[in-house]
Length: 287
Length: 236
Image 1 (spheres, rainbow over the protein chains, first blue to last red):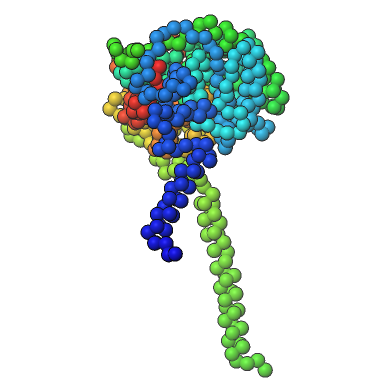
Image 2: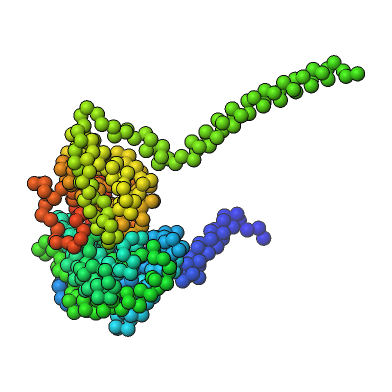
């Protein structure tokens, strides 16, 4: 029996359609057109969105556009999470010393010790990188911006400064603008509402450094550190001096002291941590 | 008996050898000089193109304060008064001042800017913002770190503040472009406050410790492009 050619074409079309539909099912990743009505695919937790809500929606609750998020009323929130950011990584080696010391390697060792010291105090610690990667400034900030009750500490080893000292930096004043009055914090000014808290955290940690490492300043320093500007949380930069030491062991000897000082500083800061209130026009964003 | 044409060929070859012997040394000299030119970096070539700061009729010997690194090695700056032939025009004056900073102090440890760097351009906007455009070596040769980068920016800002009062803010470009950071740390998308005595300046930031230069988030004409708050913002 001869099959009409139009039937053949129809049969091929059916096979192609079936294959296209079957592939996403096999990969357990349904395409947008296959998502049942009323549900929205949830983002992966490891990759927070560039525009990160400060308050994570409850599980299984569909996400709504940023404009309709209610503005949280200011109330005390416990400090639960410390986001540690070992700076540089990947092809960006950071500061380079004469003994083949690379900032990007050394900060990982410092971060591991600081993590242990903070976890011993009952704090949850997240890191922006654990290996030789180099996330962007915004990706690192997003790690903290996606959390509630978090602080952010970026770790650096400098090229200069008195060997065996440590300094803490916060960003200079970011005065509010009209854009901030919408209840939304522009991403590139995200640190604005947190400056006072950042300064308190910085002073607390710097005071511990001054006790432990002679020659370190007694109060927090101010510098426009790029990484801090886009971080919507109390945020400090720690810079240790320096990659120019005569031998690597000098830096290694500092690791326990730096870890302990940061842990003590964070614990001392913990009672003062509250989510700051934000300027909003009347009625905008109120639940 | 040698054939006649053999003599001709031999003669021609001999003449070629003599000509080559005379020409090759000259050719080698030219190749060597070309190789030397190739070895020169783009930075050096640009530096040679920069006009020499020779005293002219409009320049007078003036005492200026240069802010170089202190000998303490703690990242602070120390003013050093020197005498320079300076122009009255603020743009020319600022160029001369920054070129002197780049040339560095007598003590190389007090240097704040990398010697490989060159100032490509400097101009002042009507609002008093000084735009300093440096070569790429400014970013690639400066010691990486918060303290070292901050000290470099402070050195320029404090020296301009002391010697060129017309400059109220400072914007740093690298090779004509706005860049995210100087060498991975200090934010260059914003302008830095220079002249704190200017009348139109907004109030100073809260008291800081040890860092005299405060970046200002004023939307300067060359500042970072304004981002759409709806697409790039954090809702609280």
